[in-house]
Length: 421
Ligand code: TTP
Ligand code: MG
Ligand code: MG
Image (cartoon, rainbow, N blue to C red; front, side):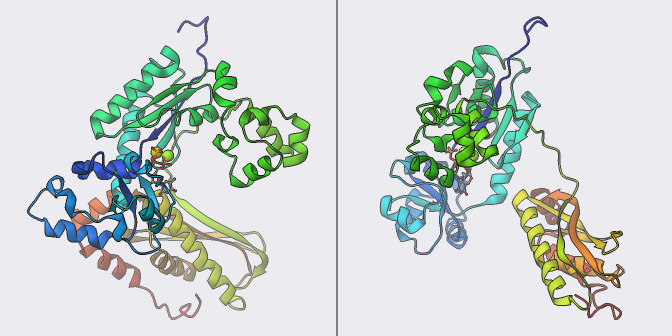
């Protein structure tokens, strides 16, 4: 690219194909091509299967031995299904009993998040080796800035997309689909066009032919509610949305949303790629409607404190982290603030354990003034997977939980503040 002709913006959206299911098929390649659904709650069955065939490698367990969807009873939902299963109308978020009616012969496997996270980190590492400007969008998808990467402009990005697909497949055995477009909004739509294992290229000039015929729901950001409202006004497709004038959209959906819809319908989006930086800590805090006193409002404060710890634990688990430094932040009625933290021997992410350590932190903070804000933080983070490997190495399979508990228990019943929280 010479300096005289600046590169045009090319943004890719890459999404793994039937991600959880595809990762399971790496373990059980004998199930390739068969309808398979992934749903929770059957870990025991899977373990039993492995125990029964303990002398065989996983890939030699006979297909006939796997549990079938038709034998499932319960309220579980499907996380995803192989493309072979999707042909029967089975898919993400569908109840398993309902899915069993559509495709009783589907094989049912339990979820294994640790495994999915492992492959998630692996495919993302491969991408950043090739194209460093990557934005994480969850376990199985990313945006990538192709603009200045070698091959990123050739055939509209197809050359680089193909290279990345091949690199991921060679390393992991997993396939993905890629859309390359002038921005995130269009790239996200394009990655679905040729799924699975496909590439779609969209230029600005393609909006009318490729985007306008699509349903409004295909715009990432138009959810079921907005879609229902649009339908109420007779607007089904993005083209019909684009035919509405700006003022009407703002009057109907509010200024911000209306203006956003106006641009989205024209395929306009200038959101930047937000690069991932590993978080140093993860925290939750809340300020109170009225200032609360540690003794007089003990019950209310205690409940809020527990809730914050639960939210923090959720955040950690969702993002796949554990940590070993639990901290609290207090802001008083006079706007002064203090923080306290305790580092324990092992990494944790469980709400109850966080609550215990955070409670110990609280006992070390002055509590005579009324509080206007309370926060709980987890630092010294480690990915849950690395922590598991570390604990296993240090303690063997089960020792670490007890050690962690002992560390938390020591120093618990402080006689001065023991009755608080
Ligand atoms: P998706 O990328 O939406 O779906 P997918 O990768 O299974 O299939 P596709 O080829 O269409 O991209 O989601 C990624 C993973 O997230 C999916 O494998 C399982 C999980 N998931 C759920 O647990 N519940 C859901 O409702 C959805 C949509 C996904
Ligand atoms: Mg996917
Ligand atoms: Mg996805």
